[in-house]
Length: 414
Image (cartoon, rainbow, N blue to C red; front, side, top):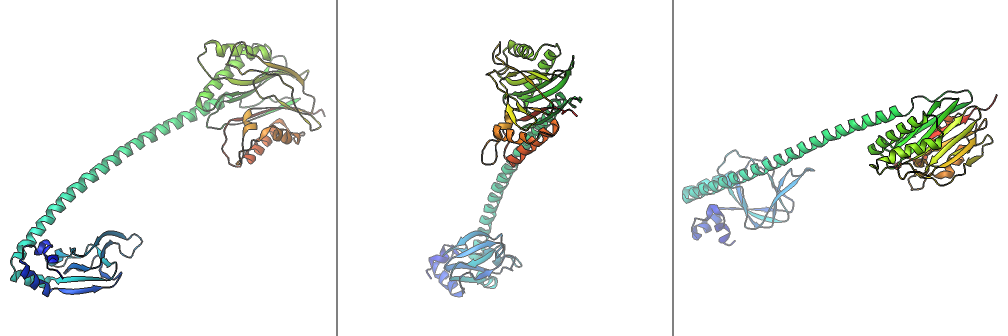
C-alpha cells in the first residue's frame, strides 16, 4: 500500500513517512465480501478503519423498509477515529460493503500503544477533535438557521391557511344565508284547488342558483304561474332572481294581464341600465272558470302540454326576448285550454342541457317521452318523476345549470 494513503489522514499527517511504514505494519487487514456488514448502528465502537479497496455504504436503518444511504466511502477514506478515544461509544450508523472490499483496521489498544511511542499522535488527535468540534458547531448553526427558516415558512403557511380557512367558513356561512333567503322567496306551499293541482321542483347547480318559480292565487278565481331562469348561476344570479321575482309579483298584484306585467318588469329592470344580467321568464294566468291559460313568454323554453290520451304537444311559439336587455321587449303571447286530465309542464333549459357521463344532453325528446307516460298522476308526481329520471341519466356527472320544473294538472272529472 502506498505510504501517502496514511499521510492523507489528518490523524497521521504529522508523522514522518518512515514512521508511517512502521504504523502500517501494525495495522490489521479486514476483508469483506459484497453486502457483508462490517458493523451495525448501535454496536460498540473500538476500531478505526481505512478503505484500501472497494466501496462501503454508510446506512441508517439498515435492512428496514426506511433504510437510508448517508454516504459512500471509497479508497483512501477513513472512519471510526472517534472510537479510538471514546471507550464505550456506539456506532451511529451501519457499514456495508458494496462489493468485495479490503480495509485496514486499528483497535483502541493499538492506538494507545502508538501514542506512547509517537506522542505527536495525541496532538494530532486534539487537532482533529477541535476541527470536528468547529465543523459540528458550524453545521449545527447552519442546521438551526435552516430549521428556523423552515419553521418561519411553516408558520407563515399555517397563518395563511388559517386565514383562508376563516375566509372559506365566512363565505360558506354567507352562501348558506343566501340559500336560505332564496328558499324563503320560493313558495312554501302550492295552492290546493278542486279542479287543478300544482307541482314544482328546483335543483340548483350550486348552493344558490338563478332559477325561480311561483304559483300564487289572484283575484277573480285566477292563479298566477311563473317560472324564470337568470343568465349564469351563483350568488349574483340569485340576487338578480330575487329582484325579478319581487317585481313580477308586484305587477301581478295590480291585476294586469301577463304580457303587460312582463313589459312593466322589463322597464323597471332596464330603467337604470346598471346590470348586464337578464332573465328568461314565462308568466301565465290560469282562469279557473274557463280553464284558459293566458301566458307571455320572454325568451323562455316553450311549455309542453300532456293530453289525456298520453300525447305530448310542444305549444307553438314565436320568437321572444329575455327581460333586462332592451325596452320595450318582444314577447311571445299565447292562450291555451287545459281540459280535464291534461298536464301543462314548464321547465328551464337546465333540464334539456343536462348531460350524462358521455356528454350527451338529456334533450327535449327525452322530456316528452318521459312525460307521455305520466297521464294519470298528480302535478307533483310529474315533477318528481321527471327530476328523478334526469338524476339517473346524469349518473353522477357534473350539473352545469340549475333545473326547475313546474306542472299544472287539470283534475279529471269524476
